[in-house]
Length: 339
Ligand SMILES: *Cc1c(COP(=O)(O)O)cnc(C)c1O
Picture (cartoon, rainbow, N blue to C red):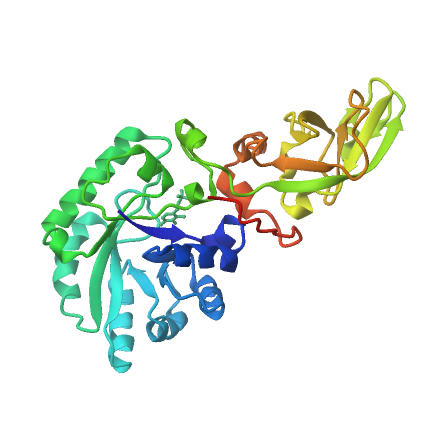
């Protein structure tokens, strides 16, 4: 099984160029990006690895795609015709993959269209159809549906000339790769799991989260009983409370929506509850019972001791969303410790 390392959305918030370079050096077959903007950044950084565009492209961007030999997926005859014309005018054959919609509803040809389309596509001599792909909408939620998608994808390939017709055959995202038999697929498209987070809880023990979100205690004060903490005064102290302020908030991408769902942070080997609402740049925790906590202490908001899944759940969202939401204000430090 070869790999397309999915590095869209700034490599899931980890840092696009830095992460893309590591995967390229590892020798993955493709880097998967969402759009031309991300493809450009990878090319500008001098990273040489084939780039696959996971999403549909705007017509104005296609000339550049052809010139740079990025690999688009084709979801419509209009796209196919346009890429064919552009490739011919550049005197090349552009390698493309056919996208099939086996249930995602976001892109691709619906399976019923395929036999007809296949005939027409093969007449486009500017295109080299080197792959076929589809996507899984619920590999971490609906095993039966996902299993049916794998077998349908298999049948589609068989109906279009078999594995020999498609050097690259890909369907599985992280959950698809972890939880299912790949059948005829020979290329996986993992994203989340490359960053050490498993979409299926059973596999988390085998992975190590790449990102630790950290800040520091910037201030410690003791507030009297009956004193409100943060906007809306949703929390009011019920005893004299030693409150530590942390220099991070939703302006850094730490989700404000955790407020009110018992969020916690990790410092000095213990967990401390967040008090009241997360503000843009700061948040407060209760350190009354920890006299050793001091200003300047490092705080883990998620990472090895506090799963990002927990933060996501409390914010009523998913790990993908939390990771990709970490903003540019947060300095990325690459330790290179992951092996
Ligand atoms: C984002 C994406 C992936 C990676 O998904 P993960 O769940 O993060 O592994 C794979 N394929 C496509 C088409 C995607 O858009």
